Amino acid sequence: MQVPARLLEYAAGRFIALPAHVTYGLVEEPTVVGIPGAATYAYGMLAWQGERLPLLDIHTLVYGDAAV
Image: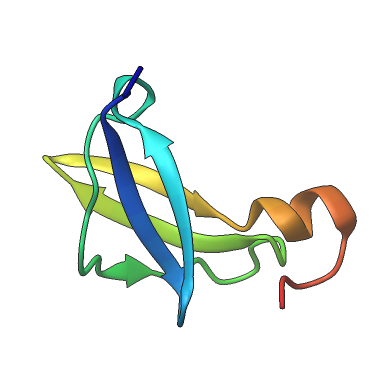
């Protein structure tokens, strides 16, 4: 059985496959606006379709250190 997926390169040479049914869309070249004083795991905000979305580093949030 094949399930449609979206292949996302999240770092040079590193990929993750996300099932299409759990994704709404992918932003290929986002413009991220930083937030002064934000937590280390908060990269900033991303403008998408008239909304502001938080951009978080889940690894840093969970483990407390920056992702490699």
